[in-house]
Length: 420
Ligand code: 13P
Ligand code: SF4
Image (cartoon, rainbow, N blue to C red; front, side, top):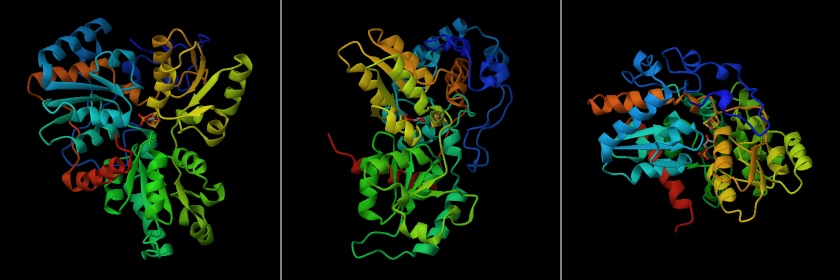
């Protein structure tokens, strides 16, 4: 069973970024609730399930028992069920997954199993919502632990974004320019609630992921004089900077301040307005860590995720999504040293999968994504066995009034990408 002491780094240091993560699972995750990082700002539809305490039989089961129970129920369910696992999940979950991938690949993976009645989504809340938006109504998307959210997604809620938009419309007006471009267009990172994807869809905007952000921004610049990018300031800044947008034309919007903390002129001059959001996992990476890796391992290839702060991205050799990082490692033909700036479960798995390379996490302190970590095998066994008995637990449902515009924003992203 993965606990902090088994998530060892190259130096065997067992320090963790959050002391709570080193607690036994059921001490760390005891209370019923829609937990931290679980899109707390979303309006949860009346009657939708909230995470209750996991029944004792699953909390007291050994790792081996849970493993066997998941294997057995999965076999009995056959094609009726599909299990999806994000790259950042623990190994004990990933080994039961029919598909492993990044958030976008997993949303698409759900579509490749049209006969599946249940999609057990081992990832976080916004990913399960996206899968529900893209799949048929008679397919149930199930999030094994409802407290598995994304703290970055929670940093932009529908009310604050709506308020920001109203202030911007007042400043910019709504008239298009001579090229037919709107004064401002919203672009959201996939890591946000369905409500925000719907908000974007209704206003002519578009969704992006970390693998297609520059293509999507190009699309947006053709249709808008400016872009409001949320929730991740780092992905927005790193991508726009590489496309040639000067930093002084990328002010940040702080939702707690009037005009986001900017003067009207700064907003008029802006090309990309960055929401004040970030990922607590990727924010930990530093330029000093890169310098240390280069000093210790001359020739090291430094790969980082674009959710890292700009100085880190600028100091790295390559930047890309979780899937990009995986492909970069997999395609190296010569034994190589890789220092990687992304979540520890993925880095450790790459190190185990490609022993011909030296692979380590840039951050020597173990910091898993604490909400991804909430998908413990006990929860997966619980929801799968319940489904077999005819009980659909932890279903994630996006109301059609939200799903329809959200789907539009996702479809615009698909149409903007190079085909083939
Ligand atoms: P991907 O879209 O690459 O899966 O990233 C999701 C995420 O949460 C990264 O922190
Ligand atoms: Fe959210 Fe960061 Fe976790 Fe990704 S790694 S799910 S962005 S908190």
